[in-house]
Length: 190
Length: 169
Image (tube, rainbow over all chains, first blue to last red):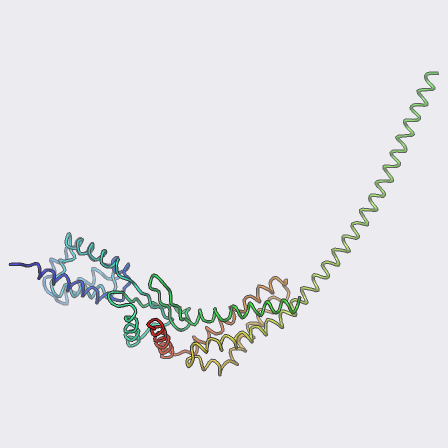
């Protein structure tokens, strides 16, 4: 009986779930958190104790990773526990999985969409749809908030920066104006 | 005979030394007078220079006060107008409320002028250079206070649509 297609399907499913749960995380943070998960699961051997997906076991997982990983990563661990697949992230299998993820994610483009305010889910969904026209999957769209932008947005995709912020717009329009006024003032007053 | 010659020679040497001492004394006196004159000239020159410089500082500060207020005033209007053409509807309100922004800019300008009144023109020039920051600050404060979350999000959507269309064209 050939088990390879089944295993391949399972691994693909896990990677898809990881992508979905952690889509808002920067790649460096995702890999760092994944390393923590693999180390901690291997060290504690908690996966042996969690054979059933129950509230008690969820509490054990939450306690183990409290403050160490993001909500997205935690929901990915819950998902693995629910389908009894935590062993994928343990010991040698965990190392292989981590190694694969490092290679995979290092090749994926990361696009930062920076705004002055936290966007609502509706606006995030809208902007994501629009950004996907330029940055299709598997590129990661990361949302970041920098209040000093004042209004508008900045896109950083690693190769270029698209700056449509009010802060930059004002800087661009005011500085030349002031310079011109100063020069004029110096000429007028000797 | 020999002693008379010696006495005469010594007398002559003493006379020469005396003449030299008198000459040296006169030279020192003359030099003192020259130094005093020179010192007077230098002092007067320096006084004149510093008087002129201090007049210039006062003059610069006065001119600065007038020109700085005008620059901030005009600059704020210019910044609003310029930003308004890009941000269109969302910043439309800023044109209407420009008056309050200008009053705020003037208050800031007055504050800087008061601080620089007793300082040198260098400080005034530095403060003048800060007028751009003042205008930026005023505009940013205006945006923070006036923009609702919905306005921010509408603007982001609109600007993103523009960028996507430009990129795909």
